[in-house]
Amino acid sequence: MDNTEIYRRLQNLARNVQAIRMPLDRLIELAWRGAETKPDKPAIAGLLRTEAAQRELSLNWESILYRHITGQFILICTALPDNAKDAQALTMRRLNNSREACSFCNLVEGSYATTELVVAKTPVGIPIPTERVHPRCQLTWQRLKLIAQTAPVKASLL
Figure 1 (spheres, rainbow, N blue to C red):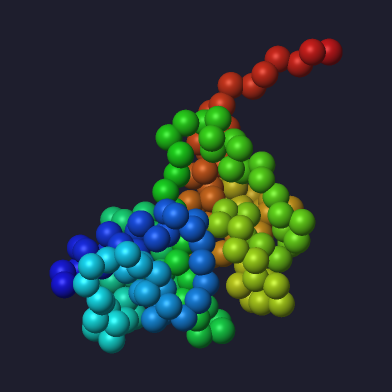
Figure 2 (cartoon, rainbow, N blue to C red):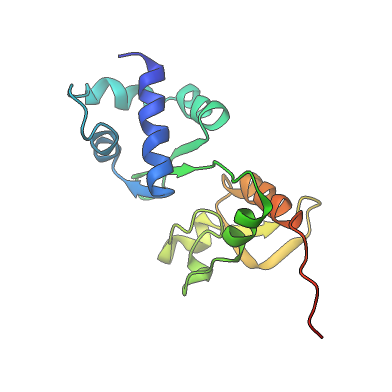
């Protein structure tokens, strides 16, 4: 199986779930669910553990894959909407436990929030105290905020 097929399946999974944390072999199973052929899990896992494969996913496939502090792997979709209205809706969503969740991918870190999440910053480096993001989600979060800011502001009724 070629690398392109592996990356395509992971990108498809990331787009369907936005963000997911689980063991790498389980991620591979989910990515190949419904496929006619069974994946060669050890070979695929070996490839996905390499820095080159993770960089390729990040740069060319709109997906981030990395190992979490717990030993599980995190797969995040970094695809951004192409219009400001959708971007604004994505930046306004909040979880009840937003101090423990990434503002971009909404992955809840729980007790690992202090080690896994950082305070989000504007593109010029000003901290946003109410926002927490994974360091790997930081740049994509900034891009999403910039897209959302281009939305036309509704006139006040006052």
